[in-house]
Amino acid sequence: MTDSPDETRARELLRAWDSQQAAYITHREARFEVMLDALASAITPGSTVLDLACGPGSLAQRVLRRFESVRVVAVDYDPLLLELGRQALAEFGDRVEFIDVDLVDPDWMTALPSARIDAVASSTALHWLAPPVLTRLYQDLGRLLPSGGVFLNGDHLRLSDGRRLFAELAAADDRRSQERGRADGAMTWDEWFPAAMASGPWAAHGPERERRFADRPPTPDLSVAFHVDALRVGGFVEAGTAWQHYDDYVILAQR
Image (cartoon, rainbow, N blue to C red):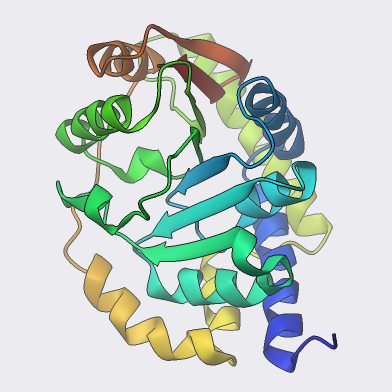
């Protein structure tokens, strides 16, 4: 089947998204690999993985490629990124479903399909949530996942605990990564969105995107310890760091 022009353009924008994200995350693909390896130990053929705050589908795409019989439910509150993801991942058919969900809403889980969720993952997204929202979200996941189900969060968790050397090295690494990315032609975050809004059916969602996020307050940096403690309070029997590069982490928890 021949791809539509919108699907072709969507995949181009997803590749550009991956490049601009990689400029902010030094070992982004290594981080994904750690997450996928952990998922491999916890899911079976026919499992369903929930991708929280999925964006245009970077993590979902990698899960679908790695696990050929697994289904992904991808949720986000950004209507532009959701439509872009639908177009970019159209090749996977009904193995992926994109759903408009606001994780700030306490009733967000009512939008999920009735099928069992076997694992949950998120990439570079949950740092946008305020502490009370994140704590409640982890409690929700504790109820959603079956016993033995895993949660994975790959994210920047800024070093704000007073370790000056660690913070300086992390900042220097971030600068080097961005310089390499720019030299290789990667867009910045602020450049990517205008490019995405220049054409395609997702561009029509730009005004709604701006409306939805106009009044969202900034959120504080939260430590790894905060995430781990909140997951344990939420009912996870194990929680901790599975991977780290300076202030970039993969947190793994098992229900």
